[in-house]
Image (cartoon, rainbow, N blue to C red; front, top):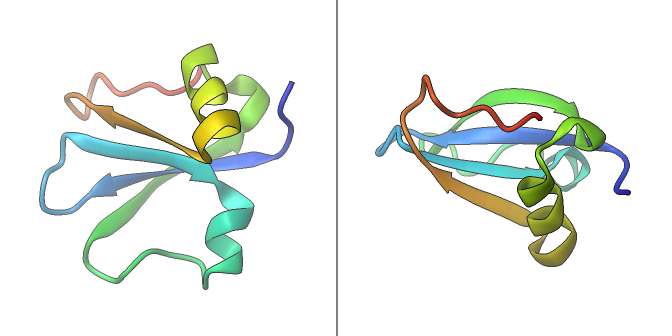
Length: 76
């Protein structure tokens, strides 16, 4: 099982697009993506993520989602 922390980001230009990535990746790259393109949306423990997001993080290093803001719930 993956350990560590994740962060979710939401697209500024399309509020239906979300990215889940390793928190340490963002800290290593300066803390946030290019200013104005993505907004921080939340953080938590990778173990708490739904299985499909944990799998995508392990396989690809990120997970991409598209849905309504009120519906996006990355944790199980």
